[in-house]
Picture (cartoon, rainbow, N blue to C red):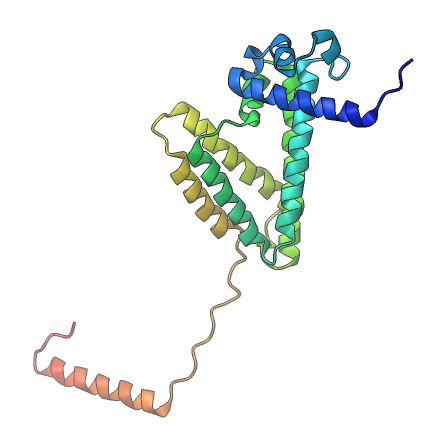
Length: 233
């Protein structure tokens, strides 16, 4: 029996995943068949099944790679001096991607999840994983005093992701909906919502003798003008 070369096996899996993602983005999850994937990967269906048992298993692996990239991005943001600014910067990156109108794999996964229980389960796990990562990121910001400590990290993370997902839902239902402007608005909302509340307003310094004399003179002038029937704006 021929011994499996783990390096070559891993390279072939990556090749299949790259081809499958292109097919899913071009034709949709349902439109892209195993035959299509095999044709572009230049391999037979029997050969492909040595690496993946089904389209669902391919999607599962693609989602896992997506989560690894998300985790890496959260790690990079956590290394920044100010995590809130880093998070808002990531919203700016998302805005630029929206402006280019590039399709993403997650859109296909969401569409398929409504009719495929296996994909729905994969999506559910992916969503929970991203929520957990965001909650951990928010906790780090709270430790540093850069994010409001009164917020519940888990619930806040879930709400933020729901608002982000809502942009795509609104865009699908309304062709006139401006996703880029909506993301700008969402960024402002996030900044105000996550920023720690001010700890009291700074006290004004006591007026100097000169300032008190100037104020007294202005008051006397105003009184005389009022007595002469002149209006004070």
